[in-house]
Length: 201
Ligand SMILES: CC(C)(COP(=O)(O)OP(=O)(O)OC[C@H]1O[C@@H](n2cnc3c(N)ncnc32)[C@H](O)[C@@H]1OP(=O)(O)O)[C@@H](O)C(=O)NCCC(=O)NCCS
Image (cartoon, rainbow, N blue to C red; front, side, top):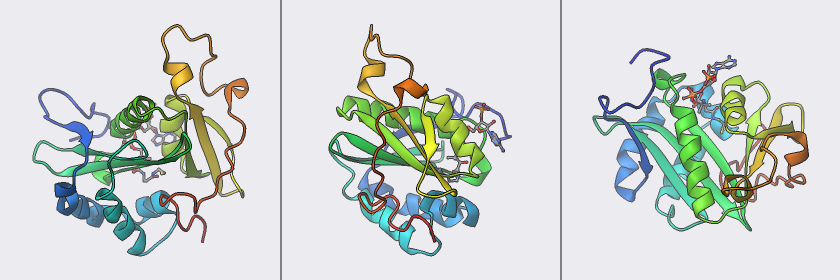
């Protein structure tokens, strides 16, 4: 598929859906086909361990605090991955799209589905750790109303937004992403979840 083509149409048969344990082999193939830079942008670390940890989380991706979504091609190939891990109503997210499928809208579709899943699960806030130079990921977050603030050093930023108050019909809350709407700083402890066990080398 060429760049800029809407990623999902009735004709292409692509979908975003919840992952199941049986997806493990297809997810491993997806990770094996990811580019090194993309994996580093996702994991904040090099090597095989983060991919192994990600595959391991698949078996526990049930319930309201751990959700894994996949973008799946018509041939059942995994072309995108998104997950959140939550604690006390705060959900940390992460996304990955296969290099050949970037800039087709899949990242935005995955994040939209993750936001919907987190909201339905009663989470109150979603946040993510993104490298400051990762303009594509920052664009995706901005498009979904995330506000951006500095991370623990110049190399990272934290994106965050509230969930239910904004999505509730008739809410008088201001739009997410505005300064006044930013939650009090989430004390981002990268070791709090399994998403960024080794954030900055
Ligand atoms: C971040 C990532 C998930 C985005 O997925 P994607 O499918 O390419 O995202 P989308 O196509 O939905 O949106 C990309 C947006 O970034 C824009 N973009 C792309 N390159 C850009 C650049 N250099 N500067 C600014 N914007 C850029 C695109 O135009 C698009 O915006 P638009 O909707 O206004 O057209 C994907 O690039 C990826 O897997 N990266 C490696 C892993 C990663 O960085 N994960 C995020 C940290 S957890």
